[in-house]
Image 1 (cartoon, rainbow, N blue to C red):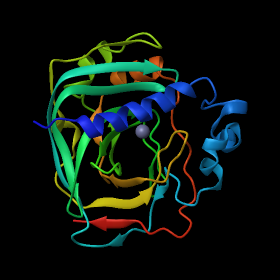
Image 2 (cartoon, protein in one colour):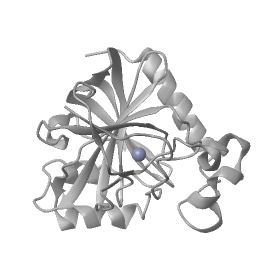
Image 3 (cartoon, rainbow, N blue to C red):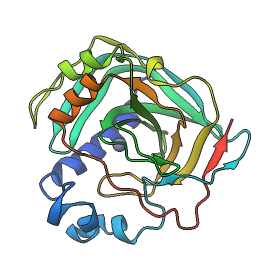
Image 4 (cartoon, rainbow, N blue to C red):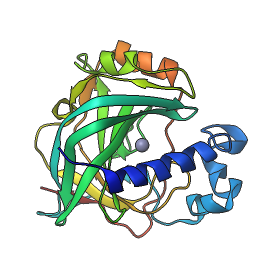
Length: 246
Ligand SMILES: [Zn+2]
């Protein structure tokens, strides 16, 4: 188990920022993704940035040794909060994080997007989960996993059942094992990008699994009934490379 003093400070800063602007942006119309950059000075990089996320993961270059070492084990005392943009799961105690280029990152929170934000070779997926981790100096590393329609996932009923009303928080499962959200060991996509919500800060090292995991059609529908379309469209890769690392 790790204590989270520094990481929690970052989580608070991120969520305060999200809350302060919760009314100001959305996924549709005049306050939708095409307009985020002009809604606020602090959102400028959403439109001006050249390392924005998500992207279409295609044309990846094989690069051995660049993958993070994942330790997404178990979390306990799960907390759930919901705002206009989605649902965030955090935990009182985490035994979960990753090591990337020799730097340790600890899990801050995870959340789901529907449909997926990243595309793989031009294809999107019904849902994508993001595990957000932070280093002690405030760098972020996010792991993305796609869902495809198939067998029911053993944990989603419990996670959906804990979703509170908009603007509210509540208790989730006492214990959750995160391994069931991680596909079998395989090469992963790696690239440098951004938060996919305002302020779109270009501080995220992304790891995305090429192979989806499964959720039932009912589970996907249950989530999209609550959280309608919270996926930012893909942005240009510009001068970035996507690596495929093992
Ligand atoms: Zn996300």
